[in-house]
Image 1 (tube, protein in one colour):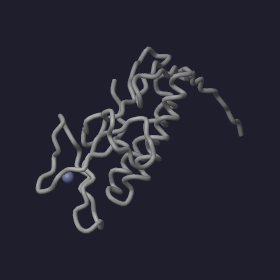
Image 2 (spheres, rainbow, N blue to C red):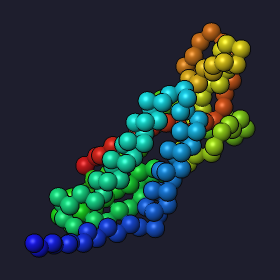
Image 3 (cartoon, helix red, strand yellow):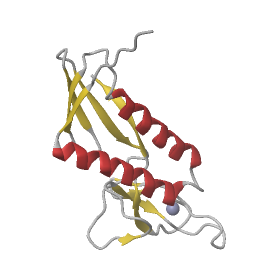
Length: 158
Ligand SMILES: [Zn+2]
């Protein structure tokens, strides 16, 4: 019985290493903040991160792959066969970015957004709707604007 072993050369630029680390921090921060409120979104985030990182090792485009940073939580990948694709982070809810003076809660994350944290029923639940274009997307109460880790998912783009 013959066993063949081959090597896949994956070159990861310094900044891309930092980006992959930031992806892990984003997922952990989001899990800490959102797990109890939006478990499905956290699961999607974890699943897409694992799936897309695994894709970096796909050999269908050759065994020599180069990975570069392409945004806070996104990568661009150049394959031996000349194929270029992106592993791109999309923010769920599309909240506004933090502003100077905003209240920060929870674990800091590389990508954060503004949300309403008004208490809805005697502190047993919170609004947690995004603020977009400077306007709350909730109604019926005074918004309490805070900065939270942004949920999202990663997808493949060629
Ligand atoms: Zn609200």
